[in-house]
Image (cartoon, rainbow, N blue to C red; front, top):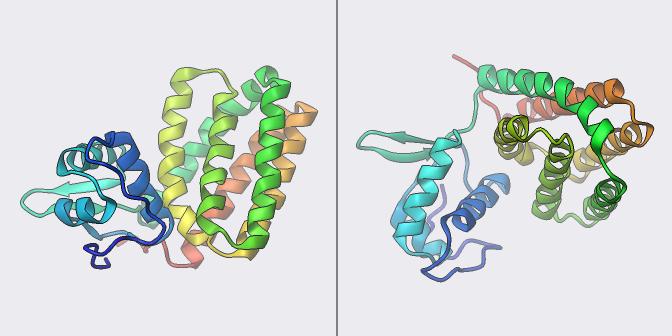
Length: 230
């Protein structure tokens, strides 16, 4: 992990009253952009200095990340970024596949025109960003794209579970998608996902979402973001 006493590129300092959730988002951005990697230690003071926040919201943010499975807290050794190995990543993808199978039919039944339009605008913006090379912004919109589809199912309990899994997948796989070629491929897959929604094809939507998630795993493995299981 880089020396974080210097300001981190692309990060805007917050004041000492920053909410922990905003600090969580900033740390997630560091992971998604590759500035923090699996196994990197999260030193409260150095991160606080770099992000311009006090240690209190930083400490709370690390607790939130640990509860989400994104950080592992080791006794007497502090917190480290926890990205899945090959075995866990496959399990995450498999579990997300089960959820997509249940959520997709609900999505096509309940999604409204406004939400469809919002997804289309996100897709169009991601197509632009893949051309300009704004990798982090593309990754953020990619996350929003999938979370909006999850929300459209209307099942709040399932949504909460799916979003937690999706976040863990997003942070791991976003690192492997930091090329225009991979982002363009993902954009093509998003277009097919949108078409299934427009057709109100629940079965087709589930299959496309499951395939899309599986391809993200393959990319992360090929780029060695995911380590081999012991």
